[in-house]
Length: 172
Image 1: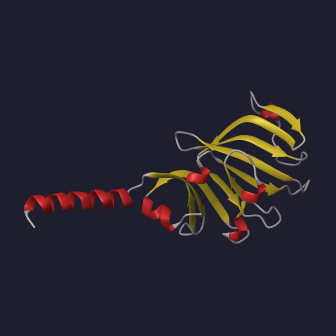
Image 2 (image 1 turned 120 degrees about the vertical axis):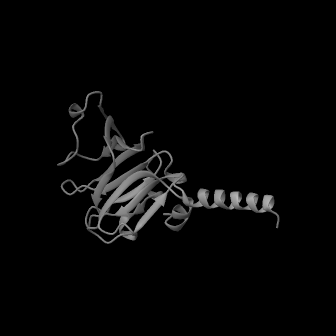
């Protein structure tokens, strides 16, 4: 093999390895806080954001918290849906610009605009936490955290860049 062909081959090999192993894919990362090796990523399905759902500990109704991704890779809680008020349910007056609506599907507080760098939560025993992709809740598409993590596991959800290799290895 001559030097020119070898140089071209070497450049292509380095480029391929770089594409495969350098952080390039934006994903929703879900990992155990005490066990960061147990991690799941999802990209395409969660492009529009995600919905965390749980059974409220007081009123026993399902709550759906709607999150979107911001360009600076933070998360934004922009809407919550619930069946009745209970401890921890936000009041629209707490956030300037937020508004309350009532539909046949329940109560909504929209325009919350609560930004967080990452979401830290524990997998509930009674709460039955789940996640669904997109901006419209569909109970047939939700995934329950207890299918992937033990109850009471502390989780970190964050929007970050990972390599193609890492994404393929830990895809949800």
